[in-house]
Length: 275
Image (tube, rainbow, N blue to C red; front, side, top):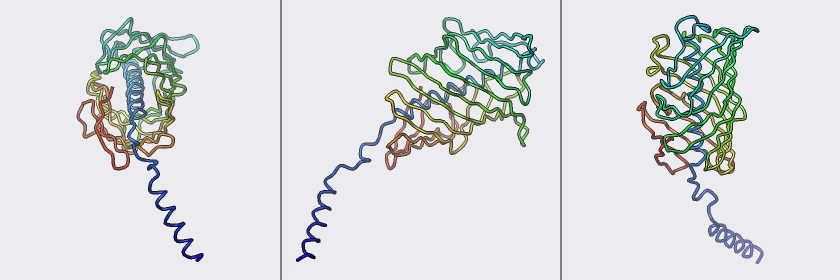
């Protein structure tokens, strides 16, 4: 009798369990992926901008005059300070459409600890800095960003360490929070004064919170490739894990400059448009 009862209870529990909703069913939310992709590309752009301007500065590198390389309508000025530091102000005025197609306004102020050479650090702060994405949404940015010139690697390419802390991107859709620690390798285009053919590889990790308040962690699985004339990552793979949800794998493609990326969540996969 006990054996029959046990079998009955087991069968009953299996029926009840099979009727419960799959906790992973419908896990197709891509908000954190899209928010991270935009923040990723914008902070990469800021790093490339300052690195390119510093490399051309008479004061910082003694090669050529500073100019608005990525945004011809912007200004970039360098001042030598009495304590041996340098201040670079990149001014977008009331609005300036840049090489990557995004429109920026306000200023970015960078303080260099010395000449732009291995060991030099650069701290960047925004002043009324706003970015209009390719989707037409305007984001107002606040952040603490530090770039360290780590020097040439074994391949002879310039590497910098890029750390972003306490980033907030406010828009009508909500606020995105973001932190990251990356290594950026400049692999092509250095020294020819043409930022459109610059190519970089980015490795590292990040974490943040999307506009819906969902926390997420990011790991770059295959180095992200970025090109000076393209607003978004052109190739590479990263993993993004939102709290309580399946890992998302984002594949940026085979090197074409477009707004597409493929997101995979379990057996679900689709193409998203980047901002």
